[in-house]
Amino acid sequence: MKYFNSNYFTYRNNQLFCEEVPIQKIIKKVGTPAYIYSKKFFIDRYNEFTEAFKNVNHSIFFAIKSNFNLNVIKLFSNLSAGLDVNSAGELHRALKIGINPQKLLFSGVGKTRREIEEALKNNVLMLKAESEEEIYLIDQIAHQLAKVAPLAIRVNPNVDAQTHPYISTGLAKNKFGISSDEALRIYKDAAKLKNVRPVGIDMHIGSQITSIEPYKEAVQKMADLFFEIKANGIELEHFDIGGGMGVTYNDEIPFKPKELAEAILPTLKKLNCEIMFEPGRFLSANGGILATEILYTKKNGDKNFLVVDASMTDILRPSIYGAYHHIQPIEKNGTDDIIADVVGPVCESGDFVAKDREIVKCKSGEFLAIMSAGAYSMVMSSNYNGRRRGPEIIVDKDKFFITRSRETFEHLLYDEKIINELF
Image (cartoon, rainbow, N blue to C red; front, top):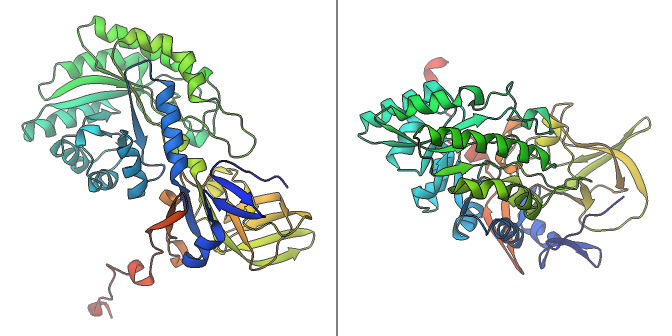
C-alpha cells in the first residue's frame, strides 16, 4: 500500500506523528474515534493563499461549514481572515470567538426570517441573497429594524465545475443563486429599495474543483456582468469568487493558489474593487485525521473486512459521495497487503470508510489514520445509533490540546425527558 507523508503527518520510527507528537500518545489519552488537527497546517495554507493574491486588494473568509471548531475558526480569525457563515448556529459560533461582525459574511440559500434578523442586529458585513423573494424579505426586516442592509447577490454563472454532482453549485439546474440572465434586472430592482444597498456580487461554482478552467470562465462571466451593473449606476464594492479549490485525497493533482492567481488576476485587477474568497476545504482538509481502532477482522468468503470503531456518524463523505479518504496504520507493523472493506459498527450497509481498498494486513487492537479529515468530517457527524461524537484535538508543535471532549451519554439526553402523563 502507499503511505501519505507530509510536513504535518509523517512517520518516525514507524510511528505516525502529527507535527512533533506521536498519534499513539494522543489516542492513549482520549481514545478513538478522535479528530486530530495540525495547527501549522492551517497557518501554512492560509499564508499560501493570501500570499498568492497579494497584488490585489483581497480578503479571505474561512468557510466554517468545513470545520467550525471554535479554536480552528479563532486561529483563522487571528490570522486576519473573516468568516463565512451559513446559519444562525454558525453565526453564534463565530460571535463566540469575539470576531468583529464586520468580518462576517452571511450566506445560505434558505435563510429564515430569524436568521436574517440576527445577521442584521449583529451588523454583519453583508448578507448574500440567493433569490428575489429573499431580497424583498431582507428589505422588509431591515425596515422594521431601522437599518439599511448591505447586500451581495449570488449569481449562478452556469459553469460546470467538473466535480461530484452533489457538490456542484454553479449550473442552472443547481438550487443556488439567481440566473445570470436575470441578474441585471434584479440588481436594478434591489437598488430602488430603501432598506437594501447592493454592495457586491457573489459566485460559488462548486467544491473540490481541481481544474482552473471553470474558475477562469466563471470569473470572466461575472466580471462582464459586474461592469454591466456598474454601467447602470450601481457601484459594487466587492467581487466574491467563493471557494471550492480542490485538495489531494488520493491521486488528484489540484492547482495551487498561485496558479489560480496567475490565471484570474488580470481580470480581477480591472474591477478596481475588493476581491473576496471563501476557501474552506483548501484551508482545513489535509490538516486533520480521524484516528480509529480496529475492533475485528473478518472474512466472508473471499471478502476481507476491517471493522473499526469509526463510522458514517464520524465521517460521512464516503457513504454519501463515495468519497475517497486514504487510510494508513498509525504504527507500521506489517508488510503484507490485503484488499479489504473498512467498515464501521453502525447498522447500515452504507456504513463504510473504504471499499475494496489495498491496505496493509492489520489485526484487532491496532489503529488506523483516516486521512484528510480536517474538513467536512466533524461538522457532518451525527448521533445515529446513539453514538457519541468524538473529541477534537489540535496539535501545536510538541503539545496537544483537547478542544472538545468526547460527548457523554448525559449530553445526548440533555433536553429529553419522560412525560409521565403519556403513560
